[in-house]
Image (cartoon, rainbow, N blue to C red; front, side, top):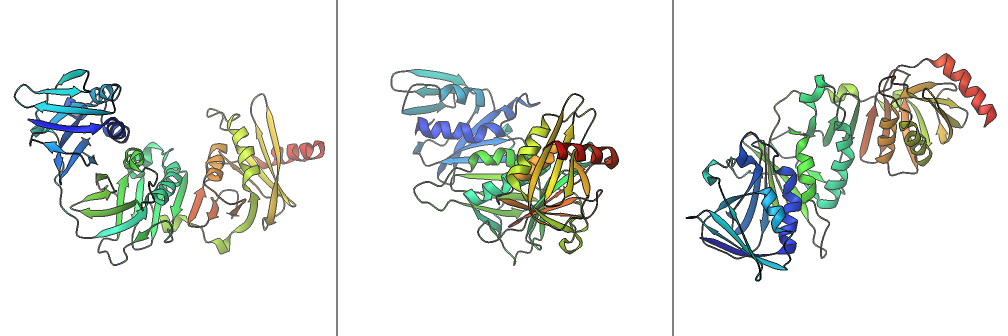
Length: 392
């Protein structure tokens, strides 16, 4: 027999945090369930897909030593009950889970043998190799996650987060663009004394972990810590632990891809104006025809131009400083420029160009971004931009 009381608020919090980690239509039905058990003196709700395992902890009084599996869909039914506090009882003999609100009782059958639940073997790591506050970690990972969204089939096996302890660097890239964070202490801190120098984690880990990163409450300094042991990484917070199998791949040659700022033509462009232009141009972008968003630098402005089969868009965007050759033109997928601007927090984006076929580099404090251009036909477009400039 196992019994515990839990507030509905806590139960809803469990479902919110764990639902992304429960597989849907899994080959093994037990992977569609949540394991409920006592762990380290707390009540643990555990979801696993054999590659990633999430533990959500609640400090509630539990009687009995049993544990059980319950389908996520049934947990979602429970949180719809009208009650501030619920009592959950599990009887291992009849394998029934009883949920009482005080006025209403519902029951579910637990059809799964808990010994079949694919729990990972937990080995206590000897050292932490990265630590960060909740809000800082969340903001950093959200900025980087954009750069894992559009991987080509040839790159999908390599589209992961690369944590390089030796170089104080976290990288995400999908083959078209790259996001790099060299975290200062206000974002997070690597353990430079760690024997581990580099780790790769699947991009899916953040999709599941982000729901666990709640806002700071009551002034608490909620902290994320990362540690590794036996080819698994342990990510822990104040009420959760995620275990992720490390990805054993040779990562991209990041050092060979990043261009030296001293070799680039630098410019400061209005982030707001460039973003507004890119947002509109995204509506004109046709994946079949792949017409790019052109950027031509003339005087103290960059001219943005985009053309669909039925429409043209022209914008004159303000430059604060311009070290780019007059008449220089380059083309991009407009969504990549929109995403780039979304990640930049300054009024003017600091960008560097080498030539029309080399990546653009963008710099924003602890972050560096790289976006590959697309091939363009300069002559016809330059003439059209001249006409539109005169009409503007």
